[in-house]
Image (tube, rainbow, N blue to C red):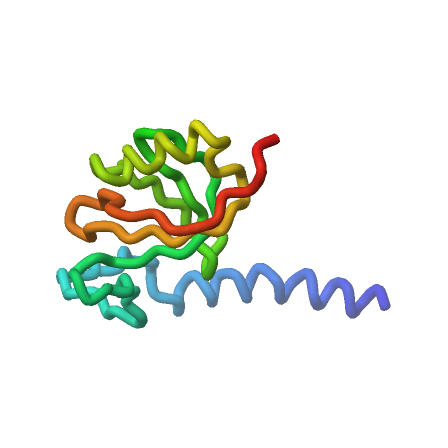
Length: 130
């Protein structure tokens, strides 16, 4: 056992010297060139459009007043959109607010202009006021 340890002790420095002599030195890698390429679209969401050019959003009310309505999507719970109301929709919302308005969780369908995100019409049955 003693002679084995001595032999290993003598061979170890020789192995380090051989590694230092035969191994190439470390060098920096060449920088990679990044080119700007158009992204690959896997699945693009398109709003459902109505015959009159309005898009449809179905969801649940989070907050509603006479100026705007905030709703959570029925299909994706992480999608929350806020729509400002048009003049006609604001007048109808004022009548609804006088009777209690929409409460949190009411199911609504919002027809909106996709370019301005302005709600033109809000459909849904408001629940009883709390």
